[in-house]
Length: 64
Ligand code: SF4
Image: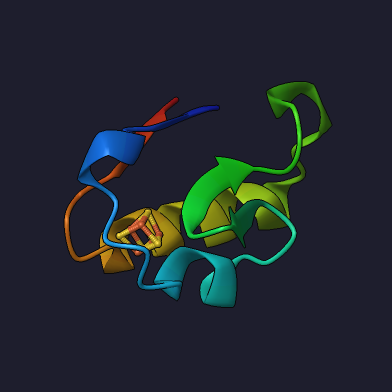
């Protein structure tokens, strides 16, 4: 799984970091990925998909 964040569209709402705090961080209002894709667990994948679905501006792109 690969996570791409289109930060230019981010609204800094914090929803992704709230759903998957191990993956997403909102440092100084800019969303960033906290870990490399080689370390993702099955639970991470589930939470990342959930966060992407909840993002109000479709900022998070998940590729299988
Ligand atoms: S849920 Fe979407 S808009 Fe909100 S902080 Fe995360 S990436 Fe940005």
